[in-house]
Amino acid sequence: GNTATRNLFVAGYGPSTTEKDLRDCFSQHCQVTGIVMKGTFSFINTAEKNAAVDARHALTGSQLNGGSLRINFAKETGRLGTTFDGGQP
Image (cartoon, rainbow, N blue to C red; front, side, top):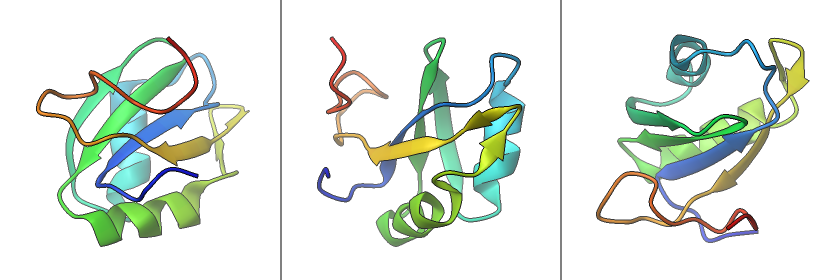
């Protein structure tokens, strides 16, 4: 896996998922500071690394709008979600 950061790469949710759905889901476990949705995956930035680790542990494999969440840590970058280690271009 990737080194733990406070930024999460999230995929696997159902196609009807909105930014609010993601915020509501992750806000139960961490303070969400920003979300960038890129179609079938999103970046969720949180305020604190340990909370992001907890959220990833708690939510990986859970169902959101008919899809099973896959969560990895995204690289910390100066700009929201510009680079990550998700294996995609």
